[in-house]
Image (cartoon, rainbow, N blue to C red):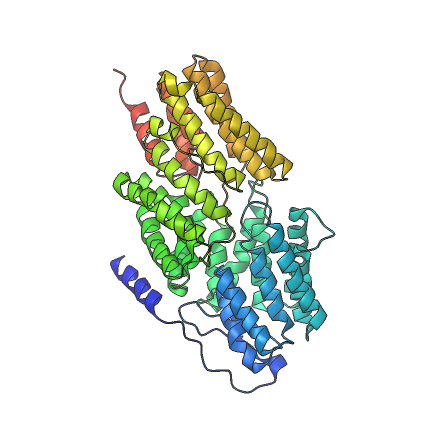
Amino acid sequence: MAAVRCARIGGMIRTIALAAILAAAPAAAQEIHSHAADLGTVHFATSCSQAAQPHFAHAMALLHSFEFGPSRQAFTEAVDEDPGCAIALWGVALTYWGNPFATGIKPPAAIRAGKTAIDRAEAIGAKTDRERAYIGAAAKLFDPAEPDQRARMIAYRDAMAAAAAKFSDDPEASTFYALALASAASPNDKTYADQLKAGAILEKLWPQQPQHPGLAHYIIHAYDVPALAGRAVDAARRYGKIAPVAPHALHMPSHTFTRLGYWQESIDTNLLSVTAARKANNVGEELHASDYLEYAYLQLGDFDAARRIRDSLPEIAARLNAGAAVGAAPGTSSAYALAAIPARYALERGAWAEAAALEVHPSTTLYADAITWFARAVGAARSKDPALLAGAQKNIDELQSLTDRLAQANEPYWAEQVTIQRLVASAWLSLAQGGSERALALMREAADREDRTEKSVVTPGPLAPAHELLGEMLLELKRPQDALAEFDKTMTKEPNRLRARKGAEAARAPAR
């Protein structure tokens, strides 16, 4: 592990180097390569001029690692070199769409900017049928005639499926189709049919291009659910070596490591990501990696390291608020991490009074605000302090208000997640008030709802898994065998969680 870490750090401090401009060849027939060894290698044929090729290659390598700001700049440089390079404007549009796995409605400003880029690409006109297919597919994402975002994602997925079938000798078309297939998969489909299909496409392509950053990256995303995570271990252990200067590439392996409970490996890769993100002034990625890092430290019981991350937040937030950070937008993952890290630190340690006293920092990300209200409600209800207990219902009412606002904003996924949080908090309040049967009914409903969905990529996992909380409640009610069953369910979905392990140990302990 030390050797791998040194190799990655060595890669991070190397300067990104592009190869010399390709040897002269007809522009329409050129196949461009990104030789920026620290970003991976991408092959993408374009009709753009020879002078635009290195910029496009660099942009593609960045795009496949979700480094959207730098990728947009490189695509723009390609257009500056060749104003007829319409396919580069396709790339610009995709950078505005951002992370396709992000759960939630895309910001209107990003949709407008993406539509503008697509309109420019169509006005210029692609020089090949293949490039027209890419541009036409991306146009589906920004179609103003379709107000429903999921419908636009499905339309894009289907257009990329057609492109991959028509241009079957183009691995990039298949790669982008697999990405669209996985990102459009329903979080309620427990067969994971689309994720498995996407993973199979990517796994077939990867041996042919082992240094392609997107293939390793998208395999991790395709299998980022508990039932499939074991399939992504090889990709997780290799992706950071393929693109060791990309903060997101260094973070992404921790999605797999978290799903499998490999806490030290998650820590190692997120430390590298935080360092790379800080060097690049990518505050959004720094915060996202820090949240996963916090989670891993807490599962190892390293509360001192977890506290240091929590205590670093004011300095990171100051840089974010200064507006100079290249990774500040979109702000949803940043807002989430800023709320989640202190909430995790309190709840995972069972510091109920501390949780109840968390300060709410209202943001435009409603589901991030819900995290703090949830932690406050659970902390107050579990504190057994009458002075704190009196405020629990107010926090629960705030969760209901946020649920209503999310529903009105056409955010059904997040409205459901906050509903689960409200049920959990209400369960603990009912228990504190002596209503044990109602408490158990509410908690079971929360667990059932949580089972029917999946976590968002923005988080390593629920702030407190509902089955784990049900187990803790059953322990308090002196029902250890029932509690053990709930802890076992938790560890099937969230393996190696500290509180679930300790709960199971307590449930197995002889009665005194």
